[in-house]
Length: 216
Ligand code: MD6
Ligand code: FE
Image 1 (cartoon, rainbow, N blue to C red):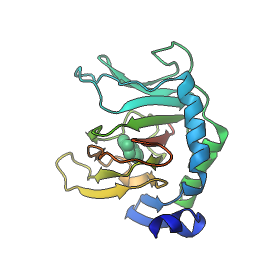
Image 2: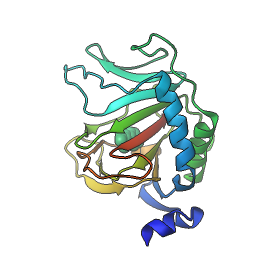
Image 3: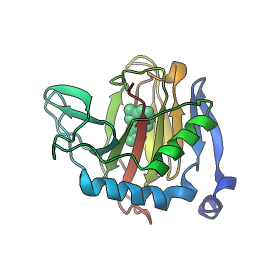
Image 4: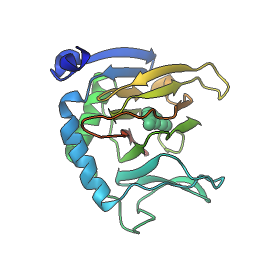
């Protein structure tokens, strides 16, 4: 029954607060998922998914790409944003206008007007892929929120506090969910538990997560 409800679109969209600056918008993207995935497909034709290396030398289990004016990258030298794709030496593909508009809409709906994302990091999770507990603090502008879109297989998102060792909460992010966080929640620790295998009609054996960031 839940699936039937979700494909109806707006009726299946509802908000849940995760903190004073953080909003989980269930079902936000369900009605736009095919379009968003088509946009993502065009981006990764030009900037293919790749497994980056952490500064410590470990291969990340999540495969990544970017679009926008800059992209987030990691290698032995550290984490940073840069305007060119290190793999192709070309600028990252432009951020599709409709994707950017959806991210702005999610931010608006959560009380952040004037969100002007210049980067969209695209994370591809195959079964078993995970993301360790981290803070997003490589952006120069920490007053802007981050908008996150989840597509495909569901994943357990670990929502922590302001200290690595703080209490954590586990929430299940599903196909079409958006999370917007800024304000006092902007620097919360968070991560993703190893992806459980399954099959989704639009993504197959995978979860795709997009995070829109305003780096300046
Ligand atoms: C993910 N997301 O959901 C990983 N970071 O696959 C993030 O690391 C993240 O969802 C900052 C803000 C929102 C996020
Ligand atoms: Fe993050």
